[in-house]
Length: 338
Ligand SMILES: NC(=O)c1ccc[n+]([C@@H]2O[C@H](COP(=O)([O-])OP(=O)(O)OC[C@H]3O[C@@H](n4cnc5c(N)ncnc54)[C@H](OP(=O)(O)O)[C@@H]3O)[C@@H](O)[C@H]2O)c1
Image 1 (cartoon, rainbow, N blue to C red):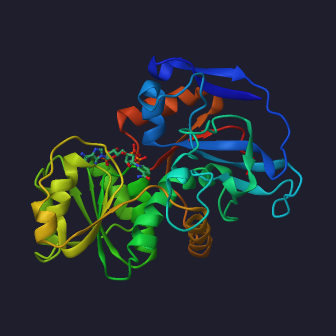
Image 2: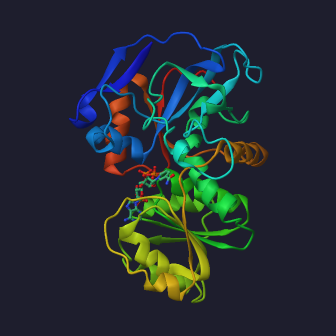
């Protein structure tokens, strides 16, 4: 089978398509024909700088895959040949709180990733794909989808009428927008592009703010919320946006710390004065994934896919992400059939 491997620290150009052996599944394992893989910002950073993660090269990147089962090992009773499945970002996080051993089971990080035609996984490291989604769509869920769901729904218990602030129109933020709309909340979304904001409106955004034209976007959020601030912020910018996110949040509100897209400094005093709740979110468990899939099927949610790339053009997907011209997900098609 063919797989992309990071072969040096020379960035995207170091990705090489190689022929690799993939054997048969052992007891408790499942062999999957992977049909699609979406990329996340973290995968781009891994490809660009494998040394920062201390990866032994060559190394297969990406955490998010979808496909169908080719064969099952002894003792696997809950999966059958032909079942459509997705990979779980953390292969060992089944339910409950995250632990340090769970953190050592991330695909495309601690473990080799899924930018490959076939792979063998522990049965609990896979989950059935929502029946309503294609393989291309399902491949967007394991990291960006689940992270947004974990933040707003599992941790935040978002309810109808809550105000939610989303930063930019990347993969996590657009899933968070869709989950906010699904729950009847009022999403405010920012972007550097008016065109992307129009797309966000079509997805149900309540209000939009161009953060380039309006660098004091937290004042605009306060105006839009009658001076109170929002109930929830899905914070993907990190240190560079956190100070303004804190200004944008109502007293006692929630900030979900997810990303690190922008550099800057934060003074924690306002966090304390406003009695804010700052939650670190790291993807999510298999149990959360199951609940999210049910909600996706029940509400007919379709992930927003900006562009799909042929397997042979996978490098272009990472280059496109680096240009930040996308809104939603970038997916590599590895022979998707459905
Ligand atoms: N903790 C976790 O479990 C977890 C899971 C997934 C992702 N993440 C992290 O979350 C972040 C987003 O990931 P992603 O996959 O959604 O990335 P992505 O799809 O590449 O999103 C990039 C978009 O973010 C927006 N952006 C960039 N800088 C911004 C800024 N200063 N202010 C506001 N928006 C800004 C831009 O939107 P516009 O073009 O609209 O301006 C950009 O297009 C990354 O840091 C990633 O590592 C963490």
